[in-house]
Image (tube, rainbow, N blue to C red; front, side, top):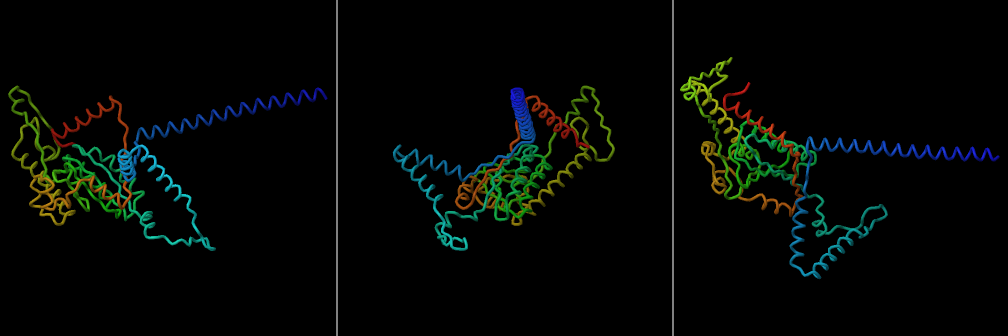
Amino acid sequence: MEFLFDYLSFLLKAATIVVAILIVVSVTIAASVAKGAANFRKHHRDTFGHLEVRHVNELYEHMKTALEHASMSPEEAKKAQKSKKSKKDSKEKQPSKKDEDGKSDVQPTEESDADEKPDKSSIFVVAFEGDLEASRTSNLRHEISAILTRANEKDEVLVKVESAGGLVHAYGYAASQLLRVKKAGLSLTVAVDKVAASGGYMLAVVADKILAAPFAVVGSIGVAAELPNINRLLKKHDVDYEVITAGKHKRTLSMFGENTDAARAKFTEEIEDVHGLFKEFVVEHRKDVDVEVVSTGESWYGERALGINLVDELQTSDEYIMEACKNAEVYEVSWVIPKKPFTEAFLGAAESFAQLWNRFIGRGK
């Protein structure tokens, strides 16, 4: 019996050790898997960016509360805080009376309906700050995609545009992203607080409504291209420059070669064609504009732009958003891409410069 007792005791100890080892191994594996998943999510987030959303109604409510408390004495602030908490608690604890069928027999009042506003529409605010290549379009397309997964036809998208223009094809692509909003049946509003000129106005013109601050710069419906020519300097120093092309108009004007009248005429023809497309785009989206008046390449301040129908209202984006918060839920939506390391950013800038240089010396393939 003593032997049997010792044996059973040994088995119990061994089983305990085995179970302990299994628990440690299981915890280690689980932690490793969790860490791997977290690293994967972090890598995905750091590589591709992430969406940030801010509820503007809450922001303004916090501002209001902060100012109210700042104007009160400490005792008044405590009383106001307690009163607010008491109202919130009583609202949450209020029982609902139900009849035998389980339906509420409490009829909502006009006041309670107004307070709850279950059918509030949403306004999604996006900011677009343009550069020469409209590089923020990569963020814009993610923001629009995110909004379209949530919004419905009673909602609105407000785009705050700030751009003096840039490359035609780049801003055309950005405008196409905004057109997705209209195709989805949502209302689209563009607000111009500072400038929406040339490509910037191409972006704004697709909106159902354009707002502008009184001194915002709007318009510049034109196309420009300029480049220096150092051919005479090269000739002076006996430097030859040759370009071999296949195709009559593969190259027109050049920085280094000798430019001909035929090349200038062809280049002008191409510029005029792009201008014509721009004018057609404006007419398509703003029927009440006299395109011959506004397509001279000039810019107008908001007050003057209103008079020639380039914009619909004189109002800043802040005014519009604060007013909208009274009847709608307003959300600021932004797609955030992590900053690149210095070396990567430097190489990217060098590549962009090289691309622009190639555009100056001639059209790419």
